[in-house]
Amino acid sequence: MAVRSWLFVPGDSEKKLDKIAGTAADVVILDLEDSVAPDNKARARDMTAAWLGAHQSKVTDGKRMGRWVRINDLGSRYWRDDLIAVLPGAPDGIMLPKSAGPESIQQLAAELYELEPRAGLPAGSIKVMPLVSETASAAISIPAYAAASLPRLGGLTWGAEDLSAAIGATRKRGSDGEWTDTFRFARVQTLLTAHARGIMAIDTLHADFADEAGLRRMAEASRADGFAGMLAIHPAQVPVINAAFTPSEAELAEARAIVEAFKANPDAGTLQIDRRMIDRPHLTLAQRILGLEN
Image (cartoon, rainbow, N blue to C red; front, side):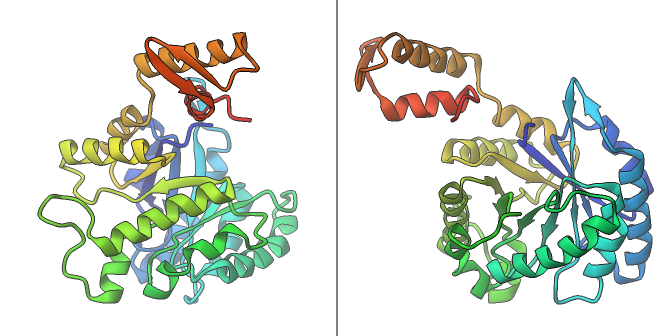
């Protein structure tokens, strides 16, 4: 399943929930946290559960849309009720905000093991993706996810908004439009830790949904840096993200040529293609582009 675009949709908005089917998002994240006011939490839960129940296998252009739910954080009074409500709809995964570290995933996993049988789901079927950078202590402990025993861990993503509020940062980007050192640190740690673990690395969102050019630059840089996908907060961002994370025909042709060259010379460590020296790391990247990773 493609994981290029991850679209947040408020769980309490009937209008926005109804529009999901018309988006080309690879993954929809039904949000019960930041986009839902406290007085609307119960309503959002019910509406999200109903949507999940009605869209068990949404398919667009022959591809199944991933169905995830962002619950409320473990320090709230809402998160257990969130799980009880949405698990019967068999979401693919749970996004956990304000994760403090591996211990947060373990706490959530313990609850999921209790609730999955009640919802008629196989044990361990629900994956978890934490937002790993929303406090200072969380941001400096991201590498701990790499080696911890976390069988449900499906990916890592990060966010800048909560972290900036937590540390009192009045800027997240410099005058050049690039992340400042604090946020670059969180982003790099997320990327490397996810790859060390062998799970999805999903980049944070571009908050200005009207800035298509800025989003395109950010999404293209994100893919070039090694992220598998990117969060979105508006349906208009989805096609831009999907395009940025889709290899061009030229990339695909080059990748095929590299794979074929090594197939014809399986014992070679280095080959020459179009006056370029190609070695095994190039083969690994080519296989990744073609979706042929071992």
